[in-house]
Amino acid sequence: MAVSNRKATFTADVKEVWEAVVSLTEYSWRRDVASIQVLKPGKQFVEQTKDGFSTIFTITAFQPYRRYEFDLENANMKGHWTGLFSCHNGETTVEFTEDVTAKKALLKPFVKGYLKKQQAAYFADLAKRLKG
Image (cartoon, rainbow, N blue to C red; front, side):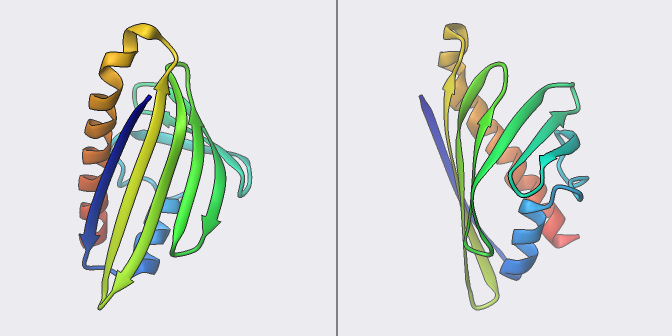
């Protein structure tokens, strides 16, 4: 099991940050996502990366502007993601934690590094999205 946690504060309203993170239709700001297909509205969706890799996400918590959680699974790993949102004086702080287990023994040594790289890219893309 590998856990990766990242926290950041953005000069943006919590509603704007929330909508960017949870939108399943406006994802063009994300460098790695080619498409998102909703399987069960409000419950389950599939993201496909630009290199053709699919991950299924099952939403487990949806508390607008406060908490968003889902289970995730693909051919290489399964796990859980938690996003916490808070706002103060016009700034929004997000804290995202991903807890993942590799399905293949060969991948176990690389999972934590992969998660950190993915989170860094996501936060960079989100920061650009919120400025633009």
